[in-house]
Length: 277
Image (tube, rainbow, N blue to C red; front, side, top):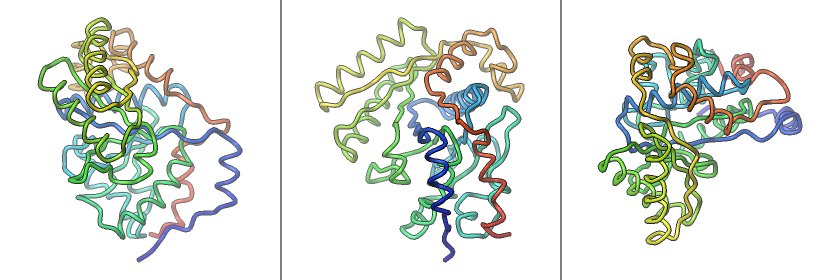
């Protein structure tokens, strides 16, 4: 089974040249279409700050953001890691300025996880920010260890079902990863209501799980978001003055960590020939 050979000297140069990449792994307690819209709009907003951004669909099911965009036929990162496809064929350039890829079709076995871990490390080094659309497996683990070492974000909307599901996700994270901080993103709620939702979840997590939560902000209910999705565009492009657009730009400002050298996810594509035809 082919493996990825990482140029250690080049990796060191990248580490010195720019800050360490930020890995944000999203677990969602919202409907699939809302999760996908959030990730796509956040990716576009981050790209506008000048950050190199990769959006990775790491879901074992067909509920990920890549499936929603009908990108599954473009090949997977696992195929690239095993030299079955070129990386440039499976990391697709979005017109909004970020890359998107599907990690694999189905769950990874032990050997596939090793191959993917090496490629994920390389892709993370070539980007400022990696947004991961993920699911927990039966043992409450994320697909790759590196995803658990980054920042875990739980997305929740303003509904009793979503709040209950979000707490269940947080509990599952704590059962596998222990007492580690978890971030909360509230969508479909105004600032005041979002604050109430966060505080209620945070209080329960602190009392029953001894777990610390952090709020990273909220996105208000906005009909422009759905309208932009129907147009096949992001809300920041289609309706830049909409409330949701303002919220996504604010989120991007918090997350953004621009590289000292340009390139981002495109660097990986330029050297994809080393991964085979």
